[in-house]
Length: 482
Ligand code: GLN
Image 1 (cartoon, rainbow, N blue to C red):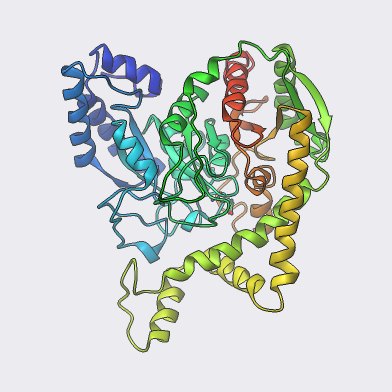
Image 2: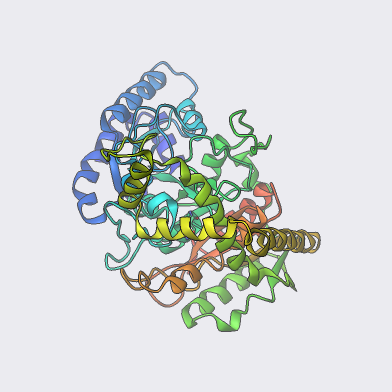
């Protein structure tokens, strides 16, 4: 009997290599567990049992033949349902794609397949990744395994819930404004958004193409680094991908933080944090100082414009990206009549409320007469914010602030208060606007629920950022400060 909740990527790798378990038995064990556990969590949309067991068999053959295997070989993962796995359904949480089957693998999937990782299934999400609680899913709403009355965060809520309930060892999510980091924070996990361009977006159902990035949700920094190493790098199918190579080994380079400068952004007012967050945040800063880091206050004067800027740029791109779902392509519609009738009726029926809201908002900011006033202005503000981050990183190595203002909230708590829902992204959106990498780690105050501590670095400085994150994770005892 294997204890699933103790498994990390590294641990699984050594168990497999030492032949203490077989990939097949491990995968089967996960499915047996998922069969009962997921009835209460709803993390998965779709299970890929046959394919996963076949993949696992292949790994066992390689191990038996003493072939070299990668760290991810035989490791069961969960994949957000907006990332394509060939021949399988990919709904992106939308009725619009309820019948859509992917005809190719996303590049990240191809790379993980090459490493012999195993895909247990596709996970629930907010429709087209738009939301902060996964409540916008057109299907099952995943629950937070730490407290079933609370949301797991969003939009990669299913991925985070799967890992936190030990129904997968790690997962992939996508992060356009925080959707990897925020659910990771809500579920007590590590969530990494790579630099824009570090990971190919080919085969990710687009939400806002200039902001979307795929990233891992894992139990620790080490596992997140191993996944990043596998999925990162140039891809000829994504012109925005860069020739970036990340070595997971680099997170062990520094043994302390002497000589590292960490910036506190003065515009993020820590005296406004709720009490338990303030406690855990202060402990985090003390821990970083003890590791030898110099903490400095710096300014990013226009950081507070990140969220308003995001809510102009993102819907503009959403409206354009989602124009392709017309009832003729991707999923056929049973609607009849003129072409216009088919468009209207299909989009009217199969898009959810939040999706329609963003399409309308995006169409508005792009329409003639408003383009200059909203869209163009938001792009200028984005350029300004990017520049200010650039200036900040001339003075400090990393920035640090919390991932979210609150821990996981209750179901329905923010569903009818849009602004409150949007404001929950206030600390995650700046990294997407600036295109920089950010990682969220769990930290605990006096209550039961975790918060997230976020480290942010300059473009392609993942090695330094994750090295610091790893040291912090170890020194803080995974954010518990015991
Ligand atoms: N919560 C944010 C939104 O609703 C972020 C979504 C995301 O990162 N995919 O837009």
